[in-house]
Image (cartoon, rainbow, N blue to C red; front, side, top):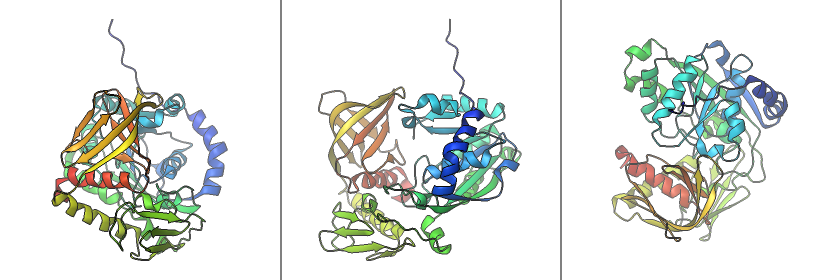
Length: 390
């Protein structure tokens, strides 16, 4: 007898109400101040909701903006299910391998929409690197055209300021949500994929450091810039890479370079903006790639996640990235991995880890040196995987 295909679990509103009444009450009074522009509750589902993604504030805010009338089904990386899948499924979270094709997910999305629920997606598929939008591929516009339901966008300003991906602590800031209907159900039948994609990208474009300056938002913390060296890895003074480190509100290098961040997010040193420093690095990396000099090979520790269970160690490995792609060889002698350069347009990463999907689950690779090696590899993948950027 053929096994019946499991349907996704729809969100249990009772659990969401309990979470909002307990943890949520403190979160929205002590950690962020949510400012809504446009009311999400007035838009009747089903629809696809696309939101920017810079911190947990994006998730918590959408839950609050929908409640108590509606509960959304969220799509999240299956790495988030390690050890807590039972609760995530009960609040309507559906797992997906990042940057991998999953045909069964379309069936699950249609089921959720047919049941009259909002379907929540983060089309950037990863946290913002420097407080600006990541790449959004046209695939999400193709999905909207296929399913012919409205597309609602929610742009968050201030979410990155609340907890930058490199920071060790959260900061209390106003987080502003701008809600728009990008495409109606009728337009999904008539408007081109290119136009739908253009509207989505336009609606979800943001710059949190500009938002901070324009709204005179002060962020005070003892560790204001601590951890920023994990994405700003090249010294503007001596040009060396992976020599920058951070202490308190300062970025420093062994050559004597010092750069200070103030409470408005401005830099006082070689650059005035975090984004300017980051873009300078990327331009140098493009030259490195174009000149045939790009090659990274690093010793790391490998872990594997099977079927969304906990990660388990598989020993030491060598992670190599070049213009040919990503190659991983294991010290244990197990079969290595190879991902051609065209396979990824970006990576899931943080200061210590890079995550890569395989046939049965996900690998993650831990790097002992956090001085920007993962950020450099991610930028190189984006440059190599998007021909228009080369």
